[in-house]
Length: 52
Length: 189
Image 1 (cartoon, rainbow over the protein chains, first blue to last red):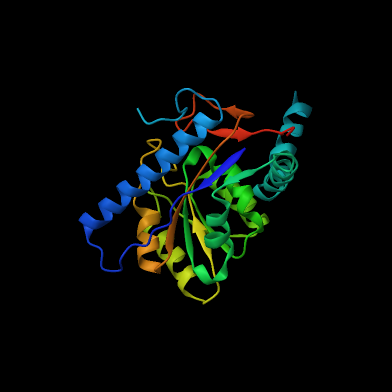
Image 2: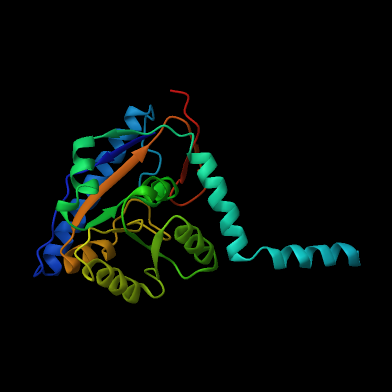
């Protein structure tokens, strides 16, 4: 099996709701990109647990 | 019939969370002990997960890989994990403690705010490096949509958020499960 570690990031202590949403989308994008890449490496044509 | 019922009652009494968790822990150790792991970005893993100087870590991963990652992180330093207050969660919490995790009980549907506060306090109570996490799309999905809880912990605790993903060629996939859970199998190479 393969594990990937994405680029870590820190969230400012005074981040407001809008900034938190940007961070949430960043985390989601990072996890989805890494998962798609690993699934491709492992031979899956379409990532198996993609959100519908 | 009576004898059969009596046997069922005795088995039910034996199947306490402690006994079930002991059995599960043993199975998990034996099963995943034969899985070979390749780490992409190993330098990043060593720098952020292993190096005490990098400070506290909040690990974010999808629920589909939760079982293996739970096993994978068992040898790192002090770790905390958030587990739902459901009956299944009781057993998972027992297994987590057997693997050396500190557990915070709650989820987005019940007790989540308190569990998040406990996790923040756990990371702030010492200068020792600590790692915390829970599946960021759990406990019931939707799959691959990040919930804010772990990000809020990272913010409040001043910890780094580290996205972690995994996949494998030899896996059992639960296609009917909301998260398409993966159980990684024995690797020959």
